[in-house]
Each structure stands twice: as C-alpha cells, then as structure tokens.
Length: 80
View 1 (tube, one colour):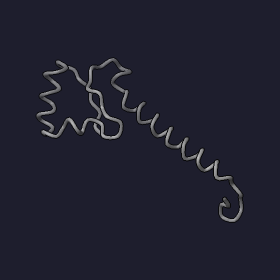
View 2 (spheres, helix red, strand yellow):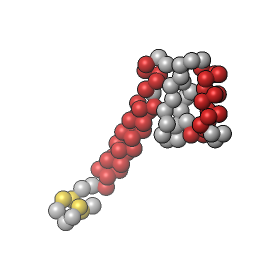
View 3 (cartoon, one colour):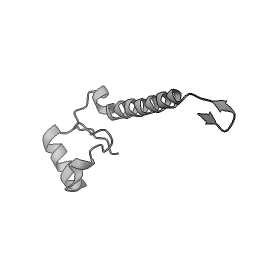
C-alpha cells in the first residue's frame, strides 16, 4: 500500500499498527480504571468503557446511598 505516493508500506504493517493501537487503548483503560484497587480503597468494579454508569440508572443520590451502605464510610468510584 502506498502512502501519499511517497512510501510503500506492506498491508501487514497497517494491521500490526491497528492491533497495537487497540491493545494500548485497552491497557491504558484498564490501568486508569484500577486506580482505587492500587490504593487499596474498597470500590465497585467498573466496566471497561462504561465505568459505573450502569449502576447509576436510579440516579446519583441512590447510587451514593447504595455505595455508602455497601462499602461503609470510605468508597472510591470512577466516573467515565
């Protein structure tokens, strides 16, 4: 495949680049979502790209009350 008429790049290089990009986005997201785990703070486990938004379907107030009753006084959560 020719890029801008200057460089001839094999197709497998594009696939490798795309694969490495997807892998790096996945690993970065996992790292950012494990913030509270690394600090040892109790927290609900967030989903990869939605965070805790599925748990907040009843509203933020209900979510806070549920987290307080589940995890006691200190709880950490990630909003995506």
